[in-house]
Length: 94
Image 1 (cartoon, one colour):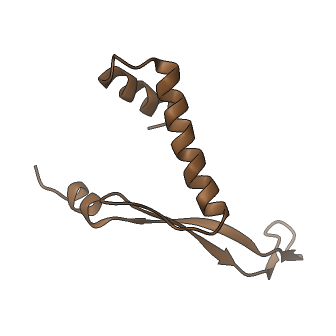
Image 2 (tube, one colour):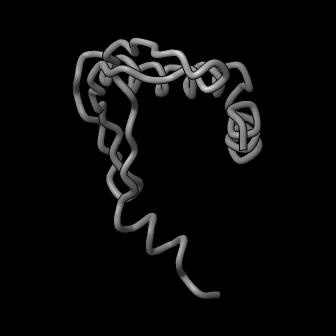
Image 3 (cartoon, one colour):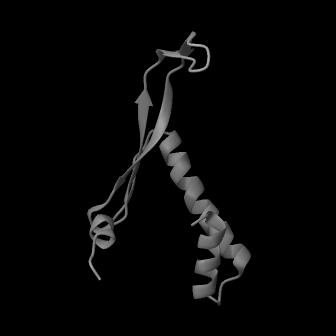
């Protein structure tokens, strides 16, 4: 599912809300998650999962095409850990 499909589903289930308002709400929620992670905070959505940031150290890598050594700069990477309830719902037998 992509963001526009999520917005459409929410708008369809809530006909009293304008589509543009639903889109604004979804964008704001996602922006807040990104802003919190950018500041180094962990974002936990109970029953769904937790978003956090992992730091990756700089290293020397290799260019796969030429085999030449390349310096890889340190960076931050997003990390998501599923919640217990989400795992249970995914593995539920119907």
